[in-house]
Length: 208
Image (tube, rainbow, N blue to C red):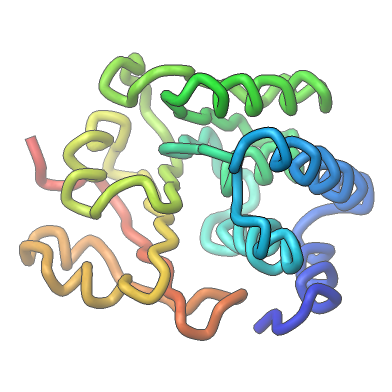
């Protein structure tokens, strides 16, 4: 469990190399500067940015084999987790979906700044993104589980892994789903917050 910024940075270092760590530190500087122009994240969370945003995003890598790709991040917003993962692991194909114009410009600008050929920003609503099979679908604060699955099922296959950080409500939200959905998922404790959970699922949801 990462209980401090020092521990979060040390944990992050176990999941990416030194060059990636340097890029992530630079990303934090860019994030802080942009946050003064638009409210990407809460100002308070900048004080614990490695724990709240960087390590919190990177921990998703521990739930799939290292070479698993491509990924799709729904509602990327400020870039967590998708942009952080793209910066840390340029060998992974990453698709970021975001409909808000200023957020799209931010995501595209950071991807260009770091020369991330692996990072593809889809500046539109998910409904308008062309279908393509994804190995991993992730999302942080995108939509309630039922709506998320109905919108994104067409990107999944029988092998797709779903990685959905859901905070403190993860267990309760899963209990409220039909049995067909509950049987797909389980909840694991977050490595960065003892009270938060990550919904982890496999396969194609039974939703038309």
